[in-house]
Image (cartoon, rainbow, N blue to C red; front, side, top):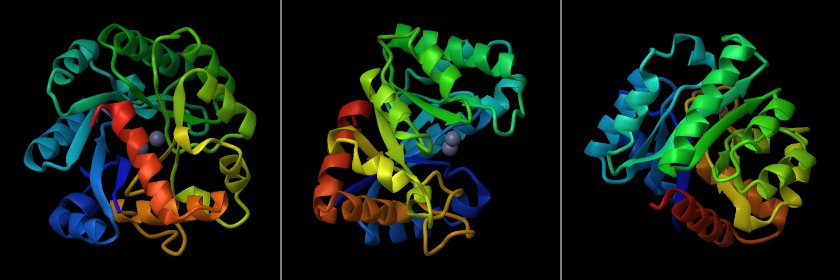
Amino acid sequence: MELVDTHCHLFYDDLKNDLDIVLNRAQELGVNRFICVGTNMEDSRECLGLAERYENIYASVGVHPHDAKDAPEDYLDQIADLITFPKMIALGEIGLDYFRNISEPDIQQNVFREQLTLAQRLQKPVIFHNRDADADVLKILSEFPDVTGVAHCFSSDLKTAKTFIDLGFYISFSGNLTYKNSHLPDVAKELPLEKLLVETDSPYLSPVPYRGKPNEPGRTRFVAEKLAEIHGVTLQIIAEKTTTNAESLFSL
Ligand SMILES: [Zn+2]
Ligand SMILES: [Zn+2]
């Protein structure tokens, strides 16, 4: 069995300091490829460094909505430079987060639009983050009809999921799919497996039974198991479908 953790932040100390052990544990759970996602210029470079050291790690480069206010003036040039490396497979994470509003909404929107413009020009998929910002994310994405990518750590409602799919995006579920009383299983049940991806968002969002502890990429397995249960299919089928989807979206 092969699973891809399509979204993890391996540059944080919890993961980085024991990376070989963490990746071995993932292999034992059937998770054998990892997309290390940047949130600013510094950690995007760290992602690339890891991708160059480990064959089964890929990287993405982007400015997260929290980091939007601190984006260096030439960040778009820096992204365009970094994305020329073959293992830099996507632009992200980008998006809007109105839950925490660490950057002002108008700054977040600007930086989101600018990065989508770049993704459109470079024809690269995007990994987007959306928290409490459904309407504005949908509005902005629809300005870029040629851009594809993934709604990472999806947590909105079914209607929003279907609209993202109509716009050409995949939906990625993380550990919060396994949380008690979550509305997400009802959403996931209605979505075609051809459009789904799995991720951990490590070190965040540990799935049940590890909720509250630092997460790690191997736990993609528990998200996939939950998806199998929801769709009434085997884990093997979920692994095959989500891996094919990841390979196709990110040209792995
Ligand atoms: Zn995110
Ligand atoms: Zn993330």
